[in-house]
Image 1 (tube, rainbow, N blue to C red):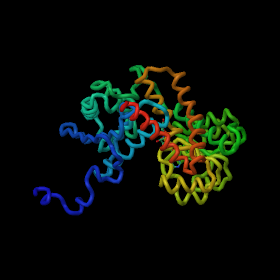
Image 2 (image 1 turned 90 degrees about the vertical axis):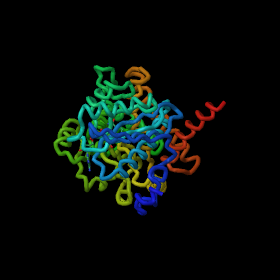
Image 3 (image 1 turned 90 degrees about the horizontal axis):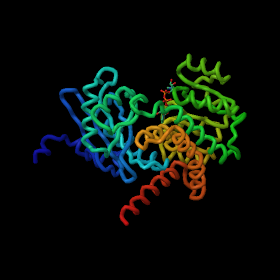
Image 4 (image 1 turned 135 degrees about the vertical axis):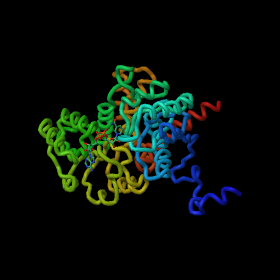
Length: 367
Ligand code: NAD
């Protein structure tokens, strides 16, 4: 057989797509290539039971194609659960473009990518992610209607970060109510790690509530500006867990809840915006449960951004965006109750709730 000759034995150990570590019953995976523009992209459609698969496009200089494939598989699955648990009628999808966004991204490449998205007839709807700007989504919009996160003057819903911060604030309040007995954060010691777009907006909400705010970031200038504006105490990154805290809000990077940090964190609640906070979903989720730390699942409480872009599809206004985002408070409480009842982690409880919605819709469709 020809393949016996061409494919090295080492690679044959793992089936290239369905055998990938991150493959999780994805519905469709589309490989897109265009020689003229240099486009190499993968669109991952994880699940469309609840609606079209919506998720951003990430442009990244992946070390190899396996990394790109695994990233799109993992990220698209995450979108399914994020939308489902938030109560949106959306499926989960994501796209990756392989390449350096600073040097290889051109309008021609983005338009060609848009044509591939268009060819899926609305099954996948794209949006911004790492390496993308609103202006790139505007370029994609020239060739397909299946794109969100476009400029406000072209009908887009605008900056998602303040909405994301509001959702995180709601999830944090719910977790405080569950763990500390009250959702009033006045006087509560809250550490915000990463005061970028979302973190800074969260600091504003916390300040209005009268919380005692600690901030840490690698951007010293930003720290000083926010410290002056909100009377927040700056904490060095390597000393941040020396403090006795009520709440830790990871708003910078993923995987900040890991073997190392779990030894040091002294907080009752963890609630932040960063994606994939648990380095190992199962193990570290369990360790948090054992330590009695109330963890508000990241993919639930940072869903404000997707609620914001969903408005572009459904045509609802700012008030409705904020109302839907406020609902994260109730869903978070529901998840804590479910986790307690079944003795599982809050992360698992959130996944269960999402899966229940998907299964119920499937049953309805069969009737
Ligand atoms: P951002 O880039 O504006 O802010 C990130 C901040 O973290 C920056 O100020 C950066 O200097 C800081 N940072 C980077 N490395 C750090 C480190 N090692 N220690 C401390 N600080 C560090 O990003 P953002 O839009 O505010 O998003 C923050 C997080 O929330 C990301 O994980 C993002 O994926 C997630 N998220 C954002 C949105 C949104 O609407 N923007 C939606 C969902 C999830």
